[in-house]
Amino acid sequence: MGRKGFFTDTTLCIGCKACEVACKQWNQLPDDGFHFTGMSYDHTGHLGASSWRHVAFVERPVPLQGQESGLGNFSWLMMSDVCKHCQSAGCLEACPTGAIIRTEFDTVYVQPDVCNGCGYCVVGCPFGVIDRRPDDGRAWKCTLCYDRLKDDMTPACAKHCPTQSIQFGDVEELQERARKRVEKLHAQGVTDAYLYGVDGENQPGTGGLNAFFLLVDRPEVYNLPPDPVVPTRKGKSSWASVGLGALGMAVLAVGAVLLGGEGT
Image (tube, rainbow, N blue to C red; front, top):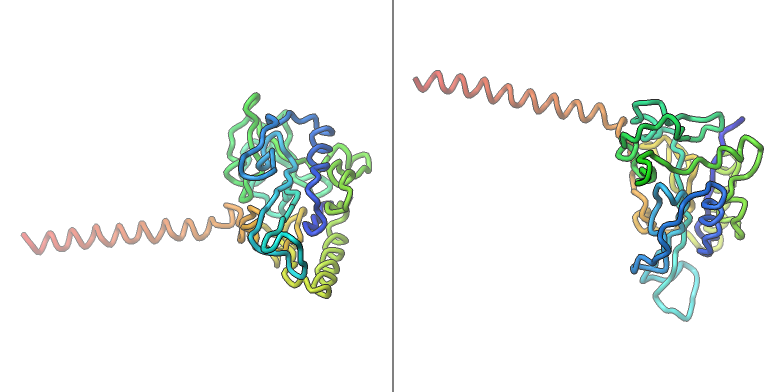
C-alpha cells in the first residue's frame, strides 16, 4: 500500500479552516462549543478528541521575511495542525491493550472498539495530540481518514484545502516535493523556511513524521515542541539515572555504618 502522509506548507495556509470543517463533517465529530478563546481569532484552540484538525492563528510582532505591508512590524502565521503519525509513535508504544495499531498505510490508528480509556496513550504523545472524549472516556485522534484511504480516496482535509497547503500522498514523494519547495523559498529570499519532522535524521526523537511541516519560525511559535522525544526512547537514560541513584544511596549507607562504627 505504501507509506502515506501529509506535507503541510504553512506558507500557503490562509486560515480558512476548510480542513477543520471537512474533518468534522466526514468523521462526524461533535462541535467544540462555538466560542472564541479570547486569545486570538481561533475558536477551537487546540487539537483534541473532537478536533482532529486545528488551524492555529499566530500573531507575531515581526514582519514576514522579504515582505512589506501596511501593518508595520506585524504578521500572521497560520498552520493546520494534525496528528503526526510518527514513525516511533509514543501513543502506540504506550497502549497496553493493542487498541492503537499501525495500518497498512503506515499510519497510526485507534480502534475504538478495543480502547478501554486507560489514558496511557495521552501522556505517551510528545505532541499532546491524542485525547479522551468526556462522554465515553475513550481516546480519539486523526485516523488520516483510514476509511477513505481503503477506497483510494484523499483524506477529507487535504481534499478540501483550497490552497494546497495540505498535501497528501506517498511520504517519499512528499519529502522530495517539500525539499524542492524549501529550495524555491530560499531562492525567493525566504531563508527562514525549513522542514519540521521530515525524516528520522531531522527529528530522531520520533524517527520522523508521516505528517510533517514547512515552517518559517521556531517550532515553539507554532506550539510545536522543538525536540520531541517519545517516552520509550528515554528508557535507557531513565534506568541509568535510577541505577546511579541507588548506587549513591548504597554508598551513603555504607559510609554511615563505617563512620558510626568508628564513633563508638
